[in-house]
Length: 303
Image (cartoon, rainbow, N blue to C red; front, side, top):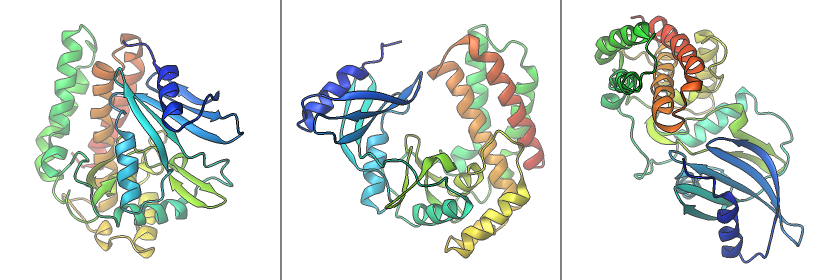
């Protein structure tokens, strides 16, 4: 694994914006990315964010979002070094309060109402349908590496979901279909003195907007279709696409959204386990989460 080149990246970015030096203060740091506040000699500040693959094109997504009118933090400068992205961004300052459901609805209406951006990856019905098969490919690679040996139940469940995926993926391109933020949680919505800004666009794509709405309440607690139905109704009332409430794949909109969001998360967790994190010590935690999500998938997608 390449060493984290954040110091060199920051030096490059500071030079680009014409500053001489900066004092770094960690805000949030993990193995694949970090966020810091930097203070320059004139007491002005900026946010320094750095991340490795697959989070290394967020600067492009943020600039695209800004171009199509989504309120996002301004990117002052960005650079890539040894597979790591570094960005200097506008410092939004402290938030005045946490985002609530109505804030989430308002942000989703704006995001889903913008025109789609061609550079973003696409998750259409065909790619949605392939998620179980892709997860099985990740499982095969994990087993070749002598990992996940006690996970026959995961393989069986993915097979079952794969067999039902053709029918259950119907309606994937019903409106809202376009920008999907994909990390759409209250923590990604900054409410400041000058309004709101949407953060964390590292994994944005073009696809079913319902996946954003399904992700808002998180995946730690069990899925709550009734709660999502209320959220969808608030979204439509606030000017979101009326088809957000339409049944799809033989399911209610809320069950379809929650079920496919969990399946999307499973494929991502399994890819992380073999490709991005690739640390056998994390396997027990990943297997536990994958099992829990797959149990939800069977229930929500009525398989």
